[in-house]
Amino acid sequence: MKSRTLAALAIVVGMIVAPLAAGTAAYAEGDDGGTEIVAPPVDETAPPADEEVTPPEVVVPEPDAPEPEAVEPAVAEPEVVEPVVPSEEAEPQGADKVWVCKYVGTPGVDERFDDRGKNPIDVAVSTLDGFDGTFPWEFADGQGRSVAIAYSDQDVTIDDCPTPQAPIEVRPTGWVFEDCGTEFDGLLLLATPGIVYSPQGSLVLFEGEDYYEYLPDEAGEVIVTASAETGYVIVLGDPTEWVTNDDGSVTATVYFTDEPCPVPTPTPTPTPTPTPAATPTAVVLAATGGADTGPLLPLGAFGLIALGTLAAVFGRKLVAARK
Image (cartoon, rainbow, N blue to C red):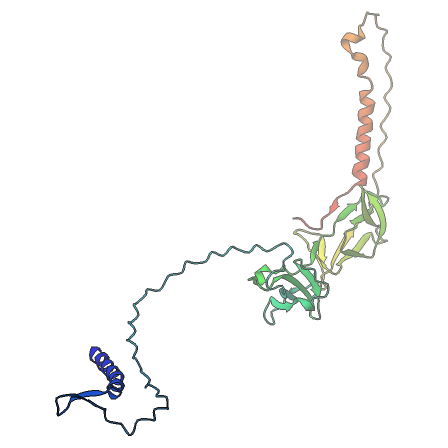
């Protein structure tokens, strides 16, 4: 590196000194011992004196740049990002689609999950007419009932879907009234939502509830069939007086007897025995209280008669189902 630099400097110095030597008069000693001015030789190749001489361009080589020092990369500190709290009015992510549970069958009769493909499925919100963003949101389509349960950015399974609508269980029940003769014989069946009785008896009020009343025919029987309306199912316990038919309805057959009521035997009236006159004595009623016991016997007899009448009117309960 140093040798190349010195060689370059020598060339530059030579180029500067050469013109000076060419234009300087030389002094030489003459024969007579004097000094003779000797003109320097004329360079025929030199340009005329009236032309401007352009000095050659001097190129000074630049020194080699120092090699860069190794700099360790700076470790940037992690930027702290404040969490963004969505406002109440902000639309949730994935709000363009929702998860929808699919069903087939009739609700309350034979409804079940649709197992013909993926369930639940994601559906565009734009296809849900009237959707207001609340869940669950039920709507009907060509296949059956559908229920939107969440936006599509949430993880859901079929276990998150509402249970298919099963039919409502109902139980027919009533009262059987039977006594001697036919005056108080009959059947009352409770008017229950979801149950249709055939034939349908006359509507009467009994113990604050509506009942259908049935009277025995000439053969002394009542036959009634109970059927469930759509969305209901009749269930029976064991034991029961109802018989289940092939179509799911149930039938009750109640028999009534026509035994004559027993004729009460008259009780002979006893002959009164005269009571001897008692010797008057002083009695204090307030102390003995004997004067207050007289009415008890007639009241007790009236109560027994009333209870007997009730027992004759109100019969046994028609068992429909026992839980």
